[in-house]
Length: 193
Image (tube, rainbow, N blue to C red; front, side, top):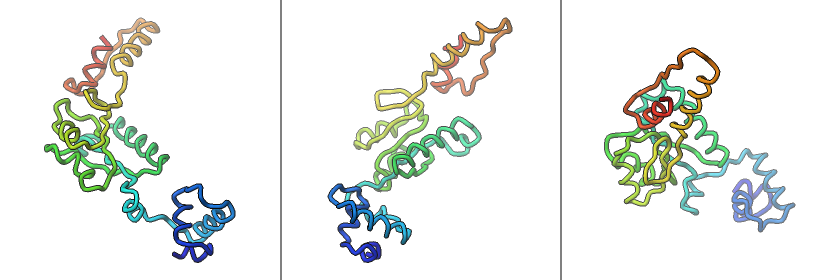
């Protein structure tokens, strides 16, 4: 209301400018944007979500928090997710994994997020089937399966790195890996061999 009054337009015109609607004349848009800047206006995402049924946030379900924050890979992964989301105007909600299938889906079911990224789940994680059955939009990061996923070329990357080192030195090449039960780690070890 303050922005509308300052710009001399209706509340609906301000709403159109904030939403990026093309149905606003350039001089009017400039006045509204000036008022937004001068008043330090920040759109209320909650109010907007009531109108378009989107929260502008995604949940990032991570392995148990005490086990990941000492691992630079996860920290860099979370930083990359945050940067990508920020560029898209999205917020993230961190959600530590739990031992029951509804936990990963809870932020979505409570309508706090529009979708879920599940980082490094166990191959038999019941949350994945639960979310699929409930038609919850989700993507798995760092695991492969019969669902949408984003993963690294672990086998090929380890193989290429080992061949690179073998071709450039006469010294033995060692492989230092992590948890041998982790699928990504197994793929890297096979690629190294």
